Length: 111
Length: 113
Image (cartoon, rainbow over all chains, first blue to last red):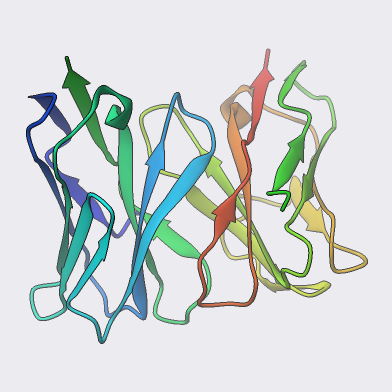
């Protein structure tokens, strides 16, 4: 079963625009991670945010976490064509072991 | 340093055959995870190892699936009597310890004809 649900399922924007993806989950977590996947192969880790953190930044990426609403958002600023990929949020199951992934958001950035 | 590697990158087999998929984790990482990803879905957990032992195998779909990590490094996922429904990308990840960032390999794309 999948805990995380990303929204929207698909997003199309122009280069230079910002992209926001949201993730909701069901049970309490230890941390939440965002991954990017190109062409259905390996996942690239973007950011890990712990349950006691509210916001983290990494380059053009900004992640927020609201544990009261069981939701997270990923913001990509000044998007580029190379950002085109699927983005997944993943939460631990509360026991800090395996990750539970959502179905992902497919982002398409056109130039 | 080297990332997680998986071999083979692609595997085509016939229904009923036995397959082995290999994962080489990042050196020094004690935790190793196997996931399976079907088209249009997110990865689904299969099994994870802490050291040599399987700490959680609750994601294995049935007893045709088995995984080992005999020396606490390389792991092999074994699938007996493959079925067409086993076709998917099998992903391996490792982390320095549990509750830390998991780094994924490129995956093995398994096709059962």
